[in-house]
Length: 90
Image 1 (cartoon, one colour):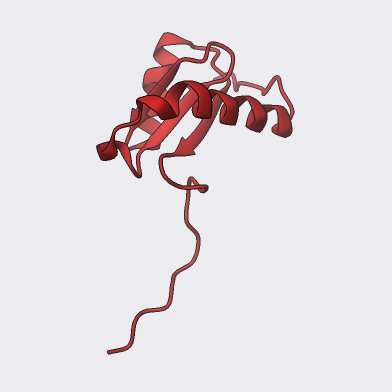
Image 2: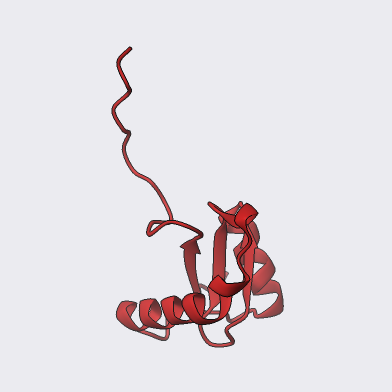
């Protein structure tokens, strides 16, 4: 299997992905999309939304096999969470 190589720096990926999300996708987001993953091809500006990151990326790559994909979670600055949070003592 041939692995895809990024064609842009991390900073350029982020700049393009964030711009596309804010300008083109965010205005189309519905309340029920909160928490879902948006996979964006930063070259074509095409995107997929799904609760599952892999499903969103797979659908996008079916249409654009050489996609350069930026991922963002609706309503959050982070795609993934690490660690736990303290539990509330009763």
